[in-house]
Image 1 (cartoon, rainbow, N blue to C red):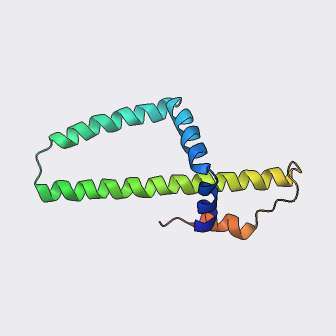
Image 2: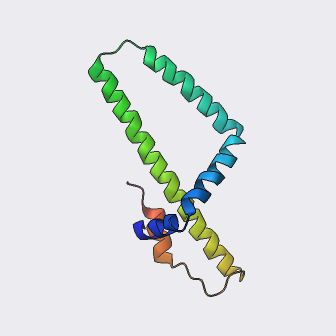
Length: 113
């Protein structure tokens, strides 16, 4: 999986991913509302009276969740690309390109990061 993702990133996939997600995200009402809610909740969180140790624990927890979710977004994007290639191949649109079931399962089976 790491090799597939690295190769795709080396070939410019990161730029495609970022542009596609930004375009789709900025046109999705639910996503935009969630972003607004997140900003408001962040402001309220910063106003809470907490000990430094407590605030650091919560900040670390949030950062860990964000990192895991960002990584999983990348994995899902790559899985979608692999599935699309496989489907196009099955439909006969592409010829000579094979996405093995093992590679597909490796991509989809990674839930822990």
